[in-house]
Length: 332
Figure 1 (spheres, helix red, strand yellow):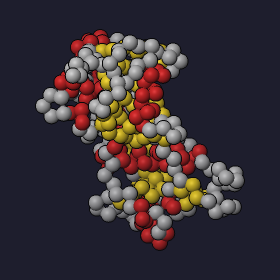
Figure 2: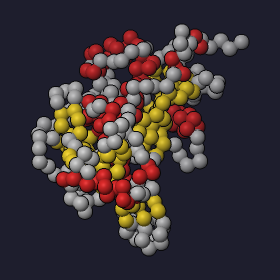
Figure 3: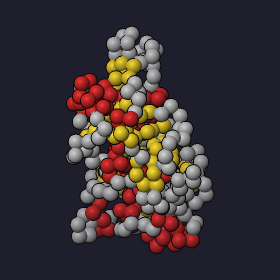
Figure 4: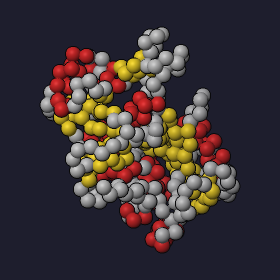
């Protein structure tokens, strides 16, 4: 008989097997209408339509209007007012048949109006689902378009293609598409239902989060999870069928990650940090975490991150905003 107290995560509805539904950067509601990306005639008509909207994006930021600490929206303009020669990325169409595009500004200089440049860490949680989805997509594509301007086969300059969703090499005819790097992010729990949080070497003292790492070539997500937890904290994830629980995913375009979120369990809580990527790691009960956050000794990931939601799933409720290391929008 297995003596492990699995009842700690099987009370009433098995919440650990329900997917996360409140991931801030996974709320997009605009239809991407991928079939229209190569329809040049349709694209031309929509670019000339004054109802179509364009967001400005540059180097990870978008042109955004903020309204106090809790609300923001994209500063959109009519597509008909944008230079007809500008390369615009097609983002999709909403339920009112309004088309959305992104203009890739070469550098984040100030534009007309009362908006400002802000990145997703600063305003992602303040945006409505439509704007959050548009900005995530636009930033991800902008990151790729700016850094993949040459053909990886022959080195020739590539051309903007498929409304921003690919680049074509005019020399060898090859097409190249945006990359997405899968990464695992996991809250590790022990048999006393404590949570493991770590601090990266480059973070300020008191900044703690879940462990995370990229999936390597030829590796499954679950294998990557086990490898990263052992490499960073010396923790071995248990081998039972219920010891890794997938909970959801969220795009994280910094510059091109897709974060796969998990809870995972260990039978041996002894920590041995690598000392290179992870400076320190500690186990917390719910009461210990609350006390450390209330005193300011610990600061948690911001609400825009999947790490925050993984911690809240274990904790049992949303956590106060002043427990997090929120990044404010700089004043104009």
